[in-house]
Length: 143
Image 1: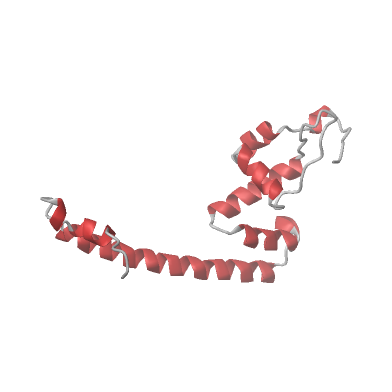
Image 2: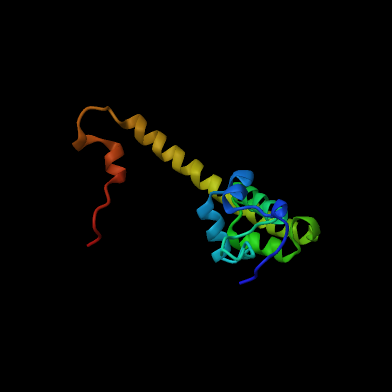
């Protein structure tokens, strides 16, 4: 455990960091446990102390997660030096792979949309035994 003795003006609590970044407190702790966010130093009282660099990193993490990047992808980006130092070629490779994954998911969602739209259109809304929506949801055990 690292203890700090910096001025109070530089110290940010986890609650303040959460408010500044829009990242939930429990998510911040999860990022610390998973090693995506370095464990912050602690005051003598044991309270976590964050810096402006942690705020920038958490904002980066939040935005990367909003764009659907996995924690493994984010770790890879951070290993490249973070948002300020990463080599564009490597970042592009990671982002292109992520884009391919998104396109596959979009394709799957379009298929799902067509299936569900056809099924809903077939539903008369009368009785449950003849409901096409319930039919596609009903999973029968394999024999």
